[in-house]
Image (cartoon, rainbow, N blue to C red; front, side, top):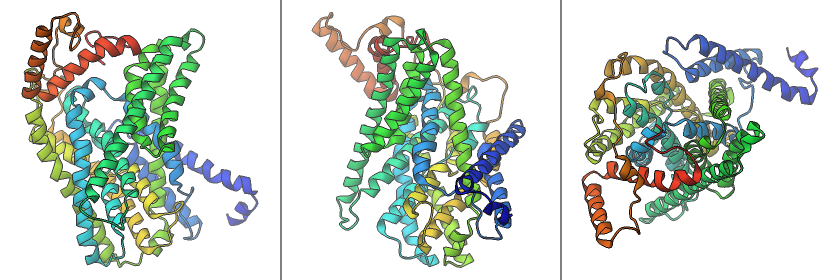
Length: 521
């Protein structure tokens, strides 16, 4: 085998690993298809297991020297693999449910990350020294909090039925994407922190940096989506070529991501909101064939990128060099893994149940027939226990250089992240189906109790702006007073109804798309 390898030239030696990896990736897709009908496992679990098996085979062939097919590069991940995953999540999101539950999703996806990060950071600081893991810097502990606060909700989404539990599905899906974006933004804010001068203003500085990154990244994504929509509507590329309009959407999304990275913003948040606004407006300005093609193309790119990442994680789990680098005993290593897993469980519970209760209080409306029951909150808590690609990428970015580390402490943290991802994805992933089936029994037809009805606004109100120069001052003041009263009594319901009126009156006529009473989008 070694003699055969030596016969290849330098170029061929670079091509062979990639060829093997693509072949294994194809095998993952075939196995995932064969296992699709039982719905017990998904592509993430399949890729992880096949990656582990592949790593074992390579380790055996190389006589214990390496389990790698490819060398991990965080730049490859953040520039080429992550953008299509996040963009497709924004593009495919059910916007009606997402915006209707926007406040609750933001509670779980933003506030929840801060609470979880704080608990994991504080717990790591207290527990790690008890298992002889010492020498970490304050920035490392803060980074650990964000690394293990990033979730992967794929397993839960696979067994949830969107038609039966639209509220639950929307919250799990929306929180999963916003959680990843928030974790990356918070991670980047921590990297800018001056650790040498930590005082009472440090928390304020982190919050200010986070809000700046969050708001500017979101604004850039919205601007990219709206610009794409108005160009497609004004120039109508479909007259000559549907390929050009699809290409424009892909390139504009990628351009928004690269601009965000160029200006040290959060590309993941930018491309997510770019996907939402392209789907909400630009998608309606392309031809019918392009509408079908874009959904399949974006889904395919995301699918391959995610399978690629999990397959690599599986092979990297058997990296002998990282395991040899760690100086901890087996007992202390197990103690570290158990401590992190316990902190993840506690950190998740610390915000899901209190924020779930708060969401129920703020989402009161006469048309809302369902709320977050305790069983729903358990499923949301469980869905966020699994860790995935973003956790791996952040860990490699914090503790390695080009996938390699010479620090025993950093090697321990990288292997800990890999173990947590493997354990949570495989073990919790297998248990997800029976848990969801027990808490939310499957029925063939959705009942009215399961449907979160959209607030009903009559056609005349939809045509009226929030304030009108054609009406008298007293009429405008009366309308403003009524709106303020509604906002105080039912804040989320009122804000959502205002947005629908504003969207139909001003946004859709300019950027494209049918009115809300003509479309379920």
